[in-house]
Image (cartoon, rainbow, N blue to C red; front, side, top):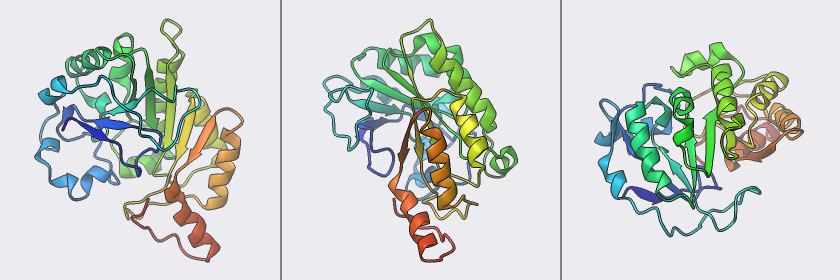
Length: 261
């Protein structure tokens, strides 16, 4: 199927996921869930980036709503589709992106979520996106050197700059911005909050490393401090997988990784 009901362990505010981009993501993030079985065995995500023609036959009309959490600025009866959940859509060529966006624009009543650590091609095609768009990026930490140890993606400040361009462009209808701090890595709460808020996100989602990747993490106190600062300027959602950090610290543990969400 080209359209799937969203799983609860991704984002509770999503209804569906679609994956029109095939091939291997060039960011090669060490912690990516696509590196774990069974998805890492799929031929679809091997080789050069390419357009999955099946997406053109996907029915995006008349979709129901099945999410567990509603966002206050999205109508409760409007489905949200995450386009590119298994890859980074921002790494696709503009030709591929144009095909994907053209298909989405055929069903403008849906809300579409596009998340990328690159975002450059999104900026170049920002006038082609559907009217009901949520742009997202991942900012795991304010520490650029730490990011480089785990990913080939652009540094955090570049991601924030590009997201701000997408959500503040006055030529278009209001579009929403989202920042995902997942998997959160060791951060300075003040610096990370300043960086995130510079992107003008409508909301922020904070989550933990659930894939046993042995990442350096901030503690529960720092997470709560980050949340408190961010809430002065935006909505903050904490994911259930942070409970592992909270519980381990309360028991005097060492934050051993778990695979639960």
